[in-house]
Image (tube, rainbow, N blue to C red; front, side, top):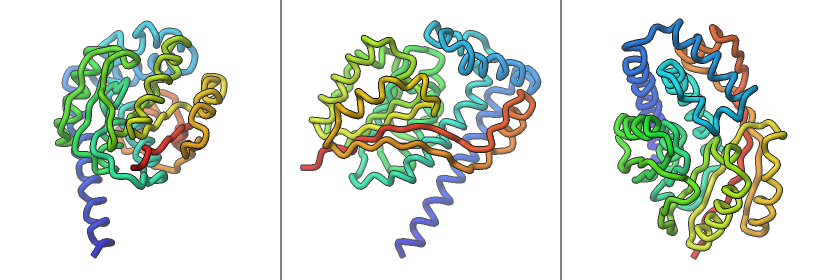
Length: 263
């Protein structure tokens, strides 16, 4: 019976994902052609790979084309990465609420919520367009909760047992003082029973803070992993990637996971 239930749930989640992808196409290709989105994706990928300083100034989302490219390509990729990491980690404690700090368009938080069975999600991001997109994502996946505009480092989120705090592709972009403050808040949240998952690119040169953070949670069950997933991209994302000169043979990421403190 349990195996049948698991298979049924997997089918429901797959159907929800497919419906979301179709809705993304309808939403972001209404006023742009695929070729326009492809050109924007080339510029957007340049921000991530070659000009990371532009991310801190909001350069990744400074045009309609880049916003559409992010929503149509990177959002599904982030969803798939976090989905696969969550499945591999298989958190033992039940997650009631996902707190997604630096939520972007909400796709990573949605993946964690759906895979973990969380009933609520709370997102925060400094970019108003991303927040609106995140709320649309939550509605599309029929997730309870909402995203709001704010500073992920300082905005209150009242952590408690049963919360899972997600930082997906956000910590690298912070200044050193912001990271230090965030670590202090995460340590406090963990004492309240919250777990947290940090996901970042696999490149070592932009992950120097990891050693300090891993040491801060030494003895708390923290684990660091490097992931390489053989996941075939959906047709739209595969076509965009090929046209933009990207060739993702596998999805990669590095994660830091700390389980919530048990009673």
